[in-house]
Amino acid sequence: MNIIFMGTPDFAVPTLEGLINSNHKIIAVFTQPDRPKGRGREVVPSPVKVKADANNIPVLQPEKVKEPDFIKKISEYNPDCIVVVAFGQILPKDILNLPRYGCINLHASLLPKYRGAAPINWALIKGETKTGVTSMFMEEGMDTGDILIQREIEIKEDDNAGTLHDKLSQIGNNVILETLDKLERGIIKRIKQDSSVATYASKIKKEDCIIDWNAGAEDIVNKIRGLTPLP
Image (cartoon, rainbow, N blue to C red; front, side):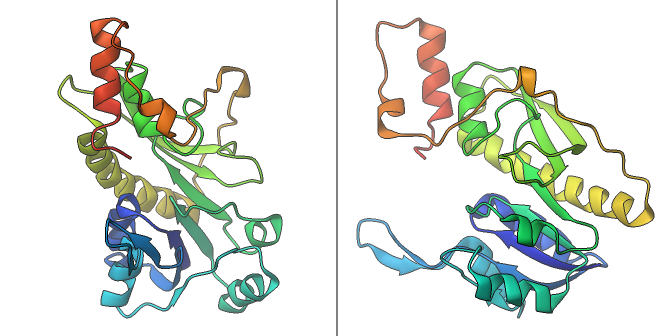
């Protein structure tokens, strides 16, 4: 397949790397614009941009992917599929309907649990003992599309947000490759999400990082695990 990849942080890099080393062709990468980072506020590229540049893949960095110029650019690339991993922007219907095989998203939870921006953190904070990754068809809702493939893993007692992030990002690479293979062969199965049991994982805010020392010991430990390293 000719694929456009959309992603930004470290979590997306193993999937991009897996696609680069597969029989698919990455025709372009979309990622967030370079941002100031750290105490020195030095402007740095996203990890996905660094990986794409190292492999001579064209990189586009729209402030808003829904702008007509970028929709036109995507249309000109004529991708068979768009793969999205932690891109950081919501795709409009005009983009979702472009690729022959649709737009596939990798999400770091067992959907419909923990829809939203910070599923790894909240799974730990809430004391979950298992989690996983889900590939799904994208639609206009936030993480509401049909489930394609899920992989479940145990959350170990010594896991924190950092270790769980790394485990899930590696599993996600294999899930996306399997999803694309089954999609291309026409044997993929779609499972509707049951929104009645959905839970949500909003972006971590400063107030979420406050520890209530009057809470139970287990709750305090889970919060520290879910916020290590600090988002």
